[in-house]
Image 1 (cartoon, one colour):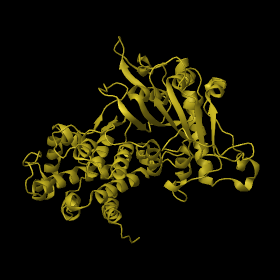
Image 2 (image 1 turned 60 degrees about the horizontal axis):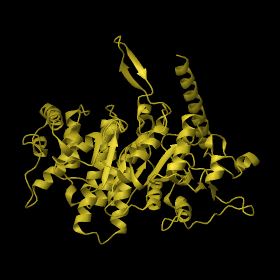
Image 3 (image 1 turned 180 degrees about the vertical axis):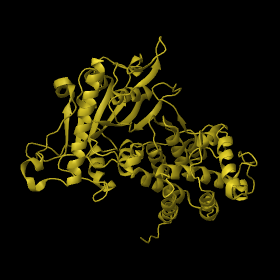
Image 4 (image 1 turned 90 degrees about the vertical axis):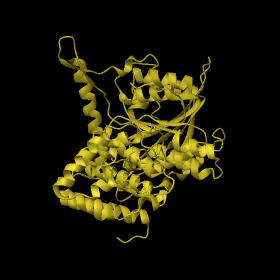
Length: 499
């Protein structure tokens, strides 16, 4: 389909070539990864052509020009050597090329990708928004390949935009995502600050580019996609030896030296987190509760999402703001879950819950919510006074293809959230208007609920009243898939406890 959007044109041109490489068995993810390596080298080369630029951090003989000068088997061999050599470097360079491998086995197609597609474009001359949007378009296309599992690292951008507009990051603030995926929340915070503050001074601009954003991702390949995504949006150091804004690691284990003003995150879903260890007898065994041993957590649990909620609290500065995407079980699970919710309500101001519809994530069937809370200083009385809930799930039906979530679908939520002063809110639900999607519950009401459950809903499900209002078959199928996944997780947990 023809389009006048420059970023869409670039995405389409690059993606069309992907279809050729798929015939050789290359996956969408592999293709985007190879593009990342080559785009970085091409832009590093273009930068050396600009007047007044320092020498390139790319070692001579392993740069873009060295790839252009080779062909056939010599090109394929040299490309592999280049990836290995650059992966040994520090900073942004090492992050992009860490454990990099060549997945394009046909030298002729590799040559075409280098010489005919990437080299013909002057990437540095493209507007930052065009470059960034083009790469984001590739990441979204990759996420749509549900078989590859890339969707779990990609949060829908309309949702990110709404969350960021609600929490309003400001110049000089620091933002951390401990499960950053491809960098959606970090980009969203950056763009909000840049676009809503037109008079940033030099120091503020430098802070935003180099010091404001911090991300951690546990999967090497995804870290590199995130780093490249930020790089193409003008975020992070252009000098390959300087510390990049993201790193690979396990957020439950690494040392966070700082605390942050804002922590927006969509942690990976999945009930259990397991670690393989070697016991005293030299046998491999699964250890489920290593995370729960932290003395700065309220409770020990092997539930990964409950641990992320606890982690986020520890990462916040006093009065810092969090927005965490959590599955339903975080809201109602008993035992450690109830303990964590009780302490969260007391020690933090848990002020807003957005119940999300199904059908908006690339991991199908996910029932999720966004929990907003602020960390507060210690005091005797609880900090949460009232939890406001917006129900965007009941009688709302979205699908990834025919009815995808749009930013406008969240306009009402952002309006009711009242970012300018969230203490001035007005409920739309009342006994006279039982269909209102926005209502609040006092701290006392929450504490009286069984297991201090925050899984609260009040709207009537129209599909239960009238079969004519049933959602589309793919929505029903997604719900069934999620229910089966939940049941399987519960069986696994029972099995582990028996063993």
